[in-house]
Length: 270
Image (tube, rainbow, N blue to C red; front, side, top):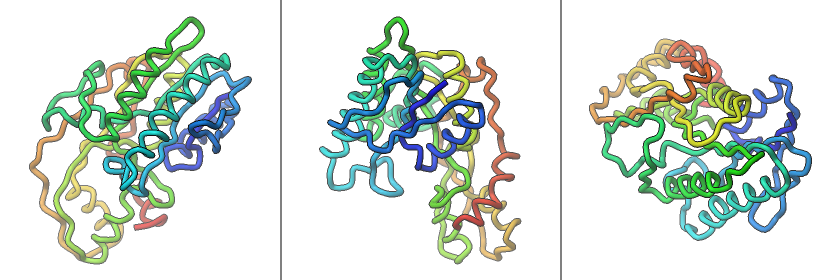
């Protein structure tokens, strides 16, 4: 397939681009898509929309001091792009959404596939509104899907734990925290499966519940850092289950995969 991809130069987009190319697809990056700028979609079989404009290092709160611009680029621009894709005859669209669509639910709420969106942050609301707009575009010959991904880790410049690793290795205080995580390669595998199945609707994508204590214990093992570990967090976490992706054969890499990724993450920053 010929697949148009936004966000191909970002951490998540690079994983997706590599996986699509490795599977034999032609990948056409769309670096210039934005509100009011028509995208080059003619001839594409599918669109994967992975781009998101935000303050560096922040998603929730990523609007900084410009919430109107944040909405215009990320909600209005995305909806326009997806509408253009259907009008251009693109057969499928996969939107990379976020577990932030659930962030108004109480911590510890189970999150199976099909849980209704309940967003609190502006980031989560935008993702939920784009999901709704995409779902409304369903038509014969056009299969729209959203993947609600949790936090993405993996090697690459500016990876999500670079600051955390640097703080720990420098002996700076690290507060306790835990959260759900997914390797970027496993998210890319989910994209491939949804495209292959012409999936529609929303799919949860999550793998591990990781406590910083355990993560940094691995860093200490690899680096010999002498600094004490933070205590384990005791806050409840809402965990997504991923029945729809599992039914397509999706099997994320688990803790062994996280351990395997850490050396390269430490080498690339942190």
